[in-house]
Image 1 (tube, one colour):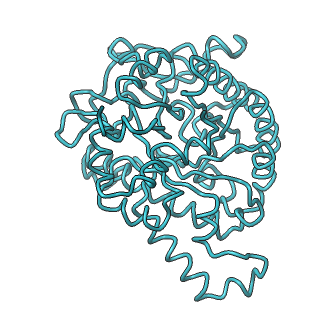
Image 2 (cartoon, rainbow, N blue to C red; image 1 turned 60 degrees about the horizontal axis):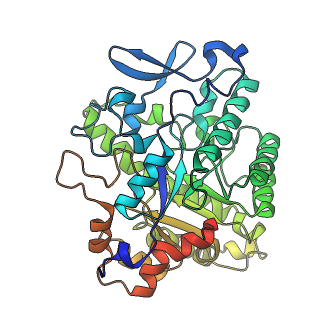
Image 3 (cartoon, rainbow, N blue to C red; image 1 turned 180 degrees about the vertical axis):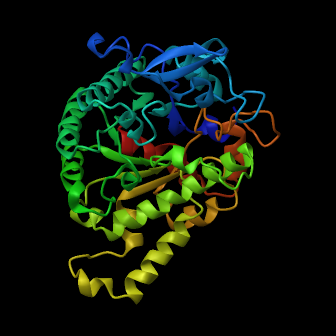
Length: 388
């Protein structure tokens, strides 16, 4: 019998994405909205997402795993995209091949924090499209509800509607919700503002964790390259610096008092990496104490690092050097992911740096105690997402 990590543990991959099929919205949203509903057009030999007459995305750009070229030379059409990226049964077969027990699933078209829906101009249609996505995602995951774990999008730009949607998706069987990690880039208050408390309260009461996926801000603005450093260099810059946005979000969450006010609320920093976690938490603890935060907030009974340890998680998929220190300090708060099938995922591409998840895990977790490996690969995520 193999002694490999992926054979010893039922590995839970806490960050993957679905390449949404072309009919997600056209089959579910009222026809009265016409071409304002997200739809696919084939132009210049490539499939593109459109809202009205504005292109808003390319399915091939989300579907890079195993592709033989780099950004911006993505797969052109759905005909070129492997079925495991958009079909649930094919995804399960891919998971079996890669020895991944469960996938936690995030969107593409609606944005990594749901801000992409705001490209629709009609408020009623925005909400209808978001709810149609949540309905479709749960249906997609019904192919195996214990292995395919959906994360519901939230209309964060409307607190009252978000509270309603938390209740709606909880009743449907959702176990987690997605929230924008940089709402201020969409004209909303920062995460540290109590403006959001009704949503946190609703999620806590419903027992749903909250995912803060990187890239939830204004990616179009971030992708601007006035210095003209080059398309691939700029893409690498944006992709790398997006991880650090969740460091800022973590400071907003903890120093804004969210863990204190909602002690049973679980939160996840998704696709952010973990190597920066020890530094940021040590910095927060230092500034907390050095600047006398406790004199201003005597109700806060824990240090930032202790709030993190109690109820916040982060995930990794490419790091090697920074994992051991993070696990040494926070063995119960680190989760494993692959980011399949995005350009930054583990799946082999044109360069030698690509690797299969199971090979990466063996290298990255070398020297880590077996009880911690079990937590990272299965136990912590299974408890968080209610996976049997």
